[in-house]
Image (cartoon, rainbow over all chains, first blue to last red; front, side, top):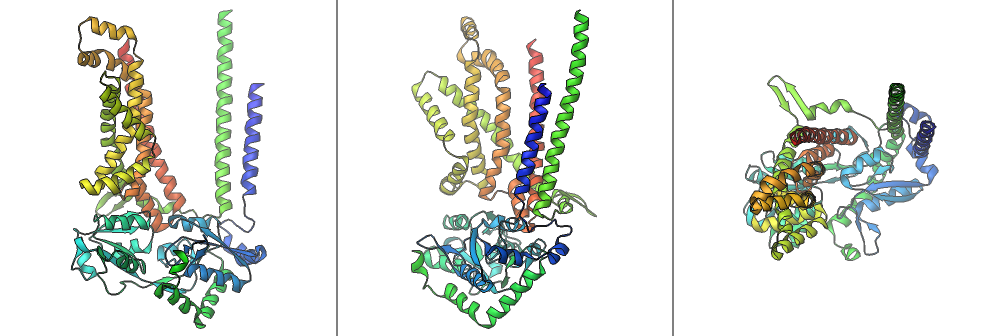
Length: 284
Length: 271
């Protein structure tokens, strides 16, 4: 009798779990095996977004790509790009802030439709997602401690075993540091703030990050930090990332970039967010 | 009558084992089925074949360990050293709390409450970003210090429980033999207490192995940090984290197994 009851309870539990599992299924998703073919037949992510009337955008906060203003609203270059994208598509926009290290898995598991997060195109990332045409370029720079790295003025000055570099894990800054400074000791931290803390504590010689962070840091802590390099040492294409195998959506995004770029709107907004301080009073 | 009963019982046992096994297998099958179903629903592109290169590689020049295994080595070093310190700190604190000096009691109590009631992550950050720059301690050492202090606080309570559980007669007997406190603890109390605290102490050691994953936040290249770095580069998120979890599981299971052997030996000695 008891066994029977246990079995019944176990069966019920499994059925419940299965039912819950099924209810979690987003309607537009397909298995990877026949994904591309089926997606092309029965509508792409683009149709799903239009039907829903909302595009869900994944991003993480990076100044001045995306940040919170005084009222708790998101502002920044990426945010403006995402709003414009949604407007041209004729849908509402829903922002889904996501930790940078988990942003691609979140896209792959359908937490949002697209990454508009200042994401640089890399071959490794491209194995997991599809990228649109680049809509902007970003560059890597170095900010160094005056006390530990005084007098260094080229990338080679930092490429030796006695130098310690801090970078944020999972960013292209981490890759750039590994490629350009293979001999240096590199420390990987989860947050940008921790790398800056290490630099200010004088435990690392320099931080590699994408501009304009190094520039603004060197201004903010002018008596401790300086910029050893005049110019950025890389130029990386920034693109929208979407799930693999959705050519319709990708085609729409590519042409959106072409059209918006030809109108000069992207360049105009980029200059506003990166080279002016007009927006500073919105966040302080 | 009794033989018949025995016979019945053995049949019953036999049947219940069968039922048990069937139920377990059914449950396992259901869980695996749910997992497969779930991953299909996600549309996740599994790429397990890219994982082994991170564990080891075999080239013309021979066999080399991959980054995950190198990370495991660092995890072993950190947990090994911390384990020794954990025992030392735990036992010292327990003895201090049971001593007659109120100052020793106060210090031990204060340390234990402070450590036990604050999160380990905060302690690691505090040790690395605040204390270490002042005293110029390396990342590895600050990780070991933070971990041993944290686990030592828990170990001290385990030791204290074990020592207080020893029968009052044992203390009295030791004293009546004219033993001082050192000889009493060394020959009478601790050998008995250790046997009793071994199971909870094992749990603490297993906790130590798992908690060591937190030191990855201060850029130490342990198993978790290696996993995070590979994940950040390749985005093989699920594959990497399942692999890392399996490695931790293997290590902690091995640890528990070793202690079980020890326990058996201790229990053999008791006879």
